[in-house]
Amino acid sequence: MVQNIYTSGQYLEKNPTWHVEESPWKVRHILYMMRRHPLEISTVCEVGCGVGEVLHLLQRNMSETCTFWGYDISPQAIAMCEEKANERLHFKLADMRREQDAFFDLLLVLDVIEHLEDYFSFLRDLKPKSRYKLFHIPLEISVQGVLRGKIFLRNRDLHGHLHHFTKETALRTIEDIGYEVLDYSYSPEYELDTTLLQTKLMKLPRRSFFALHKDWAARILGGYRLLVLAQ
Image (cartoon, rainbow, N blue to C red; front, side, top):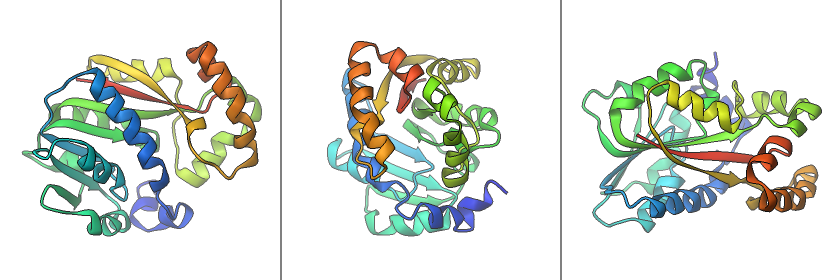
């Protein structure tokens, strides 16, 4: 039933932009991480690429010799990708794990694992598919989130989030499956535009606390995601 919301069109009904407005923000943090680690990248694949905007923007900012592939199980998402496809940017309606000979220099798994019933098997299946991985994981467990309570059910009903993480549990999950964590950084959600009044009011406290202590800001106020480079 969980997978059906992505294949049936139900997810698109609840999220008509498929979060395309977050793509420039995600790409900015991805490129920053890549500049910190001069990796030799000629092929990039995004698993759960949505409407393909992250790959589209990366193509504009990376080497002209680099080739990009996006996979998604949602026919609605892949249909929205078609106008972005070109000779170096390809999209496919498929479960990338089932691609027998697929191997890439860099695999992007951005805001995906929280949606999956069995994310451990998913991460194990992806391990042999690339040299490097970049995981982007929402850190939804915070003191503020627990006190408010409703945020977990809201994200479950609206966005399909089945699992919730802290920085520590996200990193341990990746390590327990056998990945080597090379680096990680926070992606502050206060950098994103929002129409929600409560989120707007939290922008200044989150920004100020983050400047003082990144980990405490994430644990107490929430509103951050974790970008993890692994191999």
